[in-house]
Length: 457
Image 1 (tube, rainbow, N blue to C red):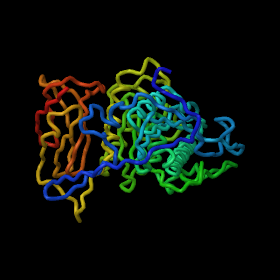
Image 2: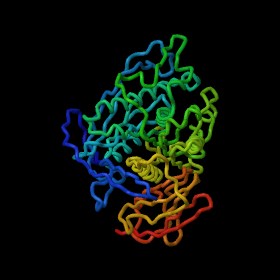
Image 3: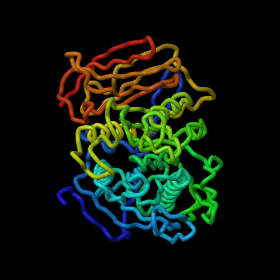
Image 4: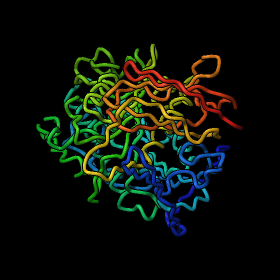
């Protein structure tokens, strides 16, 4: 295929023993903070490439058609459900060839298609799965049940809910067989595009007691059951560790609550005619489908509740603006595809370590501060630390010495606390930048501070 991809029909794979990496301790303002990497960052601080940020593996092995569940499906996508039949639910699993790590994070990719078309081998999810596996992830591209009558709100709600059930079954399957696939069941992410993003958002933020009335059935249609009740019987929590949402929406903003504090990065074009940027009907004028709430309102709700999020609203861009139509390339991939990958992989990288404060109360900084980056000079990754004494809207931007914007790292509202963000020496388009002196600036409310850093090559 020319992509460094090998196909593997066998699931009987033997893996090496686990390696253990150390725990690093850092101290801020007399409060001990434990930075736990759990083997999830680069194995050498001298390495030029960073696992989970850069493509550190040349080849990828794909295990196709792995059955993760079985569920009732529609014989035709527009008919009622009294005549369903059992369907095997399958996934393709992408792994870095020659990898010796035994606790690997997972990204589940969920394809587009408006719930009546599409499959797990669409161009974008295949490209993303390969890119993720080359970075060291176990990437999983799932098929889920289709079936949507675009003239029926009842059908629309049930279609989304079935997809959420299938994604839940996929997560539970991976947790059940985590040792077989050498994955870390505590670090399972979901990355959805269009319809797949609807599924990811509802899996992350909705509960069984918030089910739409339509999911209980009627007129001969079955009760769809709880979110974790379909597909397989494996008993595990199916909520993802974090979410990447590309041009998606949710059925009710109130479903997002503090108990389900899943970090999310969201991408959406402001002129999207298919899935509303704010709120409205899918497909713009289809008043027969239920109103949904797009990424701009979702990020507002997340920020209101103090749930970590990062939002990229692209002015004037349409649906699937990275160059696809229903997941297949159409004049793409374009520069947005690289930019979205860069932003999303950096966001997920930041979720792969945890900061624990082992004291009885949260430590709050006394003042706004932007610290010197570390390491400095650096190649190719550095960490920028900053302190927020109160909730603030924060922007952090990298500039070159001519004052030109290189990359915006953060543009969101954050709670008070000790914060950090990683820069991997790429620009807004995901391209590596040249060696030299760069400026990084924080603006938090009325506080503005700028510092210099040096990138070596």
